[in-house]
Length: 441
Image (cartoon, rainbow, N blue to C red; front, side, top):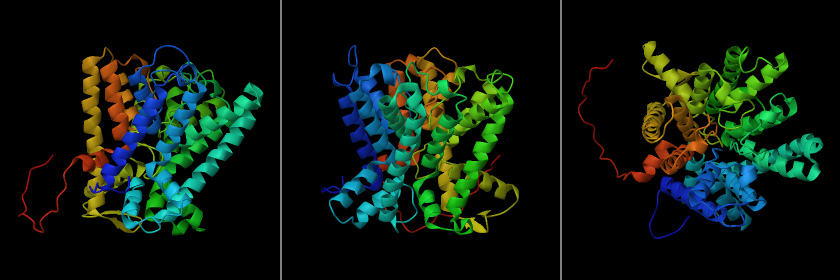
């Protein structure tokens, strides 16, 4: 991955690395030891491996009933590798073997978590691994203790481990069978709290978590950390209030007040971008489904296990619009001016994502008998690496599965990373053309 005569740029290495892991996972899932019964379908194995590595959670077969313990372990390993990233495990083995990580490798690590510089990048990756495994272990123990009365200690430990890793990595895979996800725990406060906490911690971004751990005063947090934390809190609180308001007398009508609040909170957290659900999404009102689509599109934070265009991108776009309406030349926040390049990057990510969603939705509508809401919900879920569905996933034909596989892959790595990997970039000449004017709006 790190050596060779031909020099690949960091974007190409990340794309190739994820692709190789997906192919290896597909091969392992297509072996007789991975499937409980029935014929082995290569496309099903590829879809499942892609969904696991891209930490999405969309499945065409039920994880509990279709895959053996071996298959489930493979899926768990793919989730872990995909969630923490190829570079995390490459770094782990480099450190384990006592090898020095050179500048080129640090640049690849930097791009893997979207950090602005390589300064302190190795220490961040060390902390990333320590923090991730520690939180997953705590989640495993807490879930196992809580679920022991339901299924016995042995099964509770396995279920605790699987769902802790799946939740922290925002994957959304579950072992409860019949595509039920966590609907059996819709009013279980402890399960909801543990799973949602794992989702939030995994979706904040390792750079932010490392910064919080390193600093004692919140006031000293970087601009990136402040924007991430505030935007995350606003989206969760706003989402909870809106879902509760929409579904109070509808999907949640039979719940107690506390049950309604717990279910609304969980459904506000999981679209960013975990994929678990505690209520039947198909039974929600259309406005609620549209709200979930917006939350899935925004996603989590940069450098995290989550997908979407990211909270910082969404915030930056709103700040740019606000600055434009106020007649300001610069986009500003907390006494800081945002670089023009960052604003342009945010706009590019959002527009590329919108165009990609429209294109894939068009192709699915062209090849499937379904309505636009279901199709677009599925595509946004795949691009945001969420894993929520209105029931279309299992009805996808071969072409539809391939389209969603591509969408999940693009969503995990990001449209810009894919674009950089495919585009031929040459050094630009140091010149600027005369300014031109175009009429807008």
